[in-house]
Length: 81
Image (cartoon, rainbow, N blue to C red; front, side, top):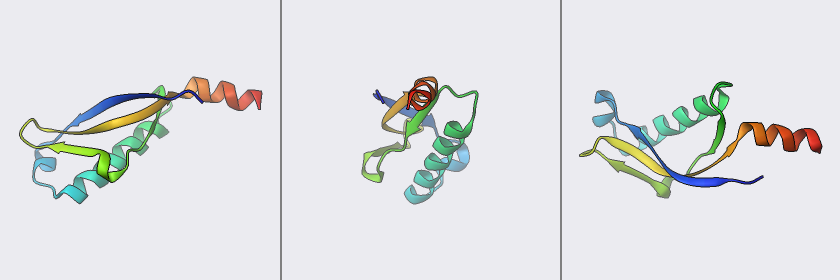
């Protein structure tokens, strides 16, 4: 599996701006899980560790350096096993 790594950010909703850090991290993991389960989303995102997550309320985003891999590539590798 050949993963890539990039900074991924998500905008904070008005509701998110008032959430506690733990709630925001839980929301981020839920968002990543939904994207990973969506057949239309082409990548599998490896969730970041809690210490890797950055919350910037002033700029209105939450993000982290995340590893990801193409779902198509994973399927090809799985078929070749």
